[in-house]
Every structure is written in C-alpha cells, then in structure tokens.
Length: 88
Image 1 (cartoon, rainbow, N blue to C red):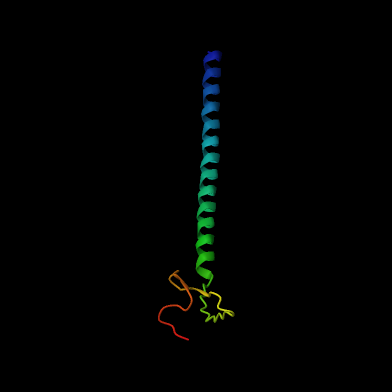
Image 2: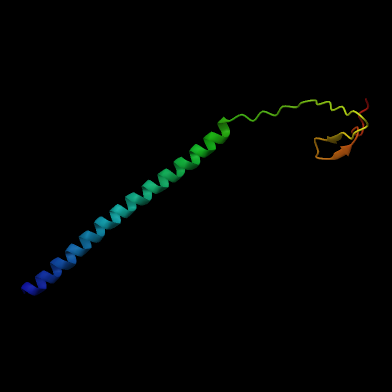
C-alpha cells in the first residue's frame, strides 16, 4: 500500500510540475508575441513619422575648350552635350 501511494504521489508531483512548466512556457510565449508586435509597431511608426522630402535642383554645367558635358536626366538617360529638348 505504501509503495502504491508513493507511486501515485510521484506521478501527481510530476503532473503538477508539468503544469507549472507549461504555465511558464505560455507566459514566455505571450511575452515574445507582445514584444514582436511592439517591434513591428515601432518600425511602422518610425517609417510613417519620417517625412521624405524630394528636392529638385537645376544644375548648369559649362565646359571650356570644347570638352564634353554629360547630362543625366531624371529618367536615368545619359546624353553627351546638351540634353534633348533643352537649348542654350
């Protein structure tokens, strides 16, 4: 009888410990998920709070002694000399 009671108490102790361990794992999982959402939210907030300002500059490039002046347009085309459609 004592041996049977001892086995039952050992089994009961193991079940209780597993329950405590599962509770700790669940709390850790919830904490990780909350921190994950906070990280993503902070990143989205950071990206939405910064203002992107595009500035356009007119640049005149003169060459002396017959040198070449390359023009890089806003679409990425490179033209030697004066850009098409623009006259001096």
